[in-house]
Length: 82
Image (cartoon, rainbow, N blue to C red; front, side, top):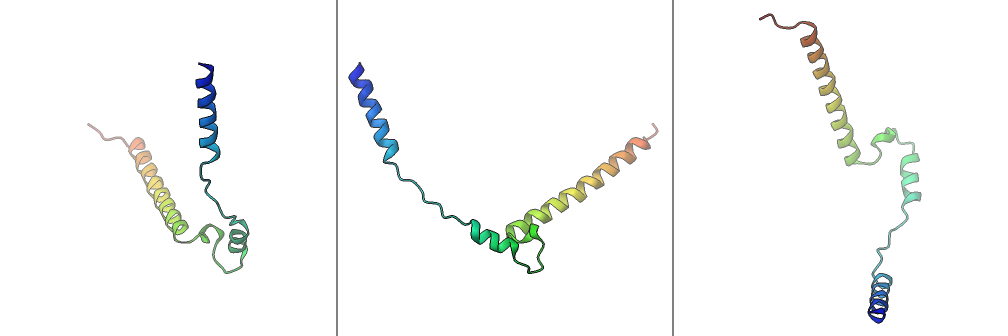
């Protein structure tokens, strides 16, 4: 039993230590340069098209939500007479 456990431990250690690790490039300096550049673009849109889409989606949801709240408040303030 003990030998089987030791064999399993060695196998798991070998599998974990030999697994390929993905190398990730450090992009911090490039991102700092991009976001700190003075090019007239607001910082919340400097990330590119994805940021622009997220910004527009957020604004649309905010406008829709605000309109819906006003609509519901008006309905609550002036209930329909039956």
